[in-house]
Length: 144
Image 1 (cartoon, rainbow, N blue to C red):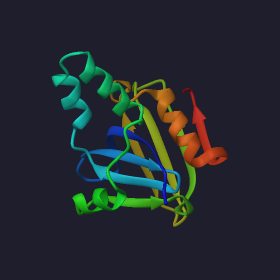
Image 2 (cartoon, one colour):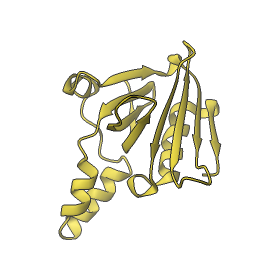
Image 3 (tube, rainbow, N blue to C red):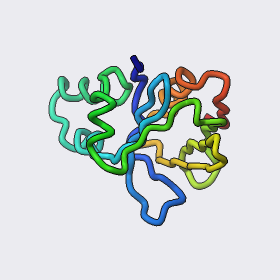
């Protein structure tokens, strides 16, 4: 059974004709690319009281698990799973400009995918920890 490691929220998928916000659900055996429900943004804007704030922090750091992977895949026709065996290289970077964070995937079939977000959406060191758990030595990080 796959182990859920965490979520990278509100990520832009670069290279497609339309730019949609996505969430990357990281498992020990791959990444589920799913349509973002903007859950973290709504929670951030509507949090009232300490208990709700604590819940938001647990969601952000991945300690509250994702919904079942099959449910996530079935939630939208564009949601898809990329198995770790299909990923030949993964790079996590923070360029000088613009002030964003990126995950670049090079897939076994030669295609490349890029996902970008601003720091407000995800804590960079938490993302690095999640990706390191999933990909180990195959992960290259720059300026994190």
